[in-house]
Length: 253
Image (cartoon, rainbow, N blue to C red):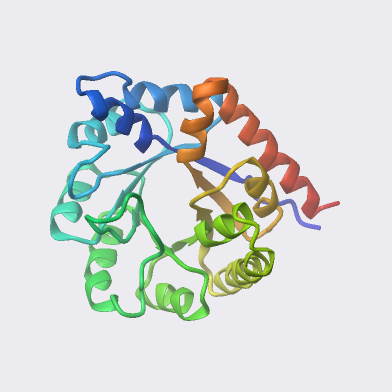
């Protein structure tokens, strides 16, 4: 069997900023958290600059780009304002995500099929600037095929529905969602896409999805920040890296 590509861990530091913003000021500093995450084994840092700036702020993005020594994955809505910030900041990568003011957090993937007209110029502009572009989508075949047609080199498969079904004990639904993710990862790989995954992942689900050979990156945030309250951020990231490594070993077992 060919050697598997390293499974990267992108750590999302949005909710460090959520804690900071609950009281104001600069503590806890998401940039400090990003540096600690990298020292503990993160392969990159993810940050979502929302329209309402509810957690990450503009200066956080600027500081992350200037101060971290690993790739910055800038999550953003496909809007003119955000495209302008991305083109100015020049992160390593941009992940286009859906965004609604009324949601507590991102509730699902982009509907790339219905939003092709909005997404196409943004994908083109960012790619032309040398920024790697990813679309955060569900694993349905139509969404993956549309992402490929739009020219996005990467898709991040939304794993939230699978994780929620597992947590709530809906076994049949969880299995259906898992099979959709497996099939979507295989389809995306066959179309030449790089496959990432994220949303709702914990140690157990990260270990499971790490066994999919097509997946080369997991982006995880809320769980890690929550567990850091009890274990510390560095140890939490090390535990996650170990879970991912265990899952990866299953592929060649």
